Length: 371
Image (cartoon, rainbow, N blue to C red; front, side, top):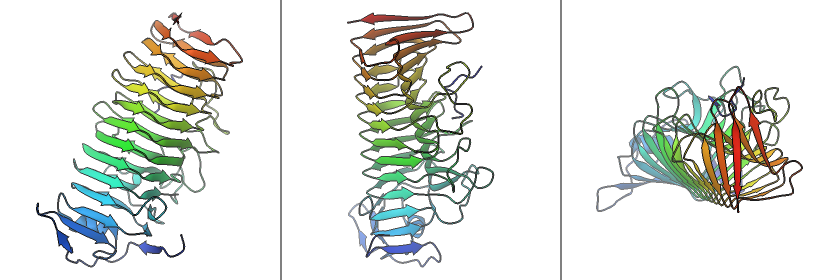
């Protein structure tokens, strides 16, 4: 029996810079606190060269251009570009594995606190599912923290795009079995990924994800935002769309007990908050399992199967609006008795029952609808 939540799931006039030689230079300005402003490519020819030269607390400004390099950051610095579409960190032809043997375009590790803003991180990678697959656009591990603002993460796929296992996540925070990370992601576009838009993974990993646009790949099965394996956080005010089962994904389908479902938002740990999001055209809008997960005031439209799926726990869902789909809410019991209370949830235009229970293996599912 498959339990679906377990997913261990050049512009004109812009320069193109390839990471080659490093020529150390002296930063041009220093603040009163002793930190420096470093400018790429004025002071350093590549972003990695500037990171290597920076001291903790330094600020790196990246001028317009396409920078074909991997960037590895293990110290407290900020990187600021000239805007989405103007400053791009582009995956190079050959990717070098990071600390844990996985490939990413930007890796943040070693407990560093890093700010990235006004830039794009872009694939595709050149690997395949069998060799050199791109694990993530941005990878946060080793207790590091990422603050991502007014940015874009896009084309996080291999060539060609294919449904590789545990591959091509836009932003990956933490990892199994022991690595953790944290992040604050705001006002960022995460699009055209091959696995999931954002994954927060492992107990001890946390994230606040607010006001972003997360859009799945049109040709492969994807998920939007996932908090899994005990990770906790807040998901508020995002627009998440186009995360569906795609052919040829043989394990994917509407059977909750024997197939996988793909969702806009996934959460499985107590304390996670999912509020005021807009979910459009996903297979399942919101899919949660466990207890004490706060789901409220979300607007869910045109789910191909279910607006909200609640599995194996006790739930209270408040004032969500669900339009379209086969069912508005599915209450699923596969390993424990499951009870859901729906308070002021508005469900319209479903092709099947607005609220449907699914039971397996001797446990029961119960739904109580309140005005």
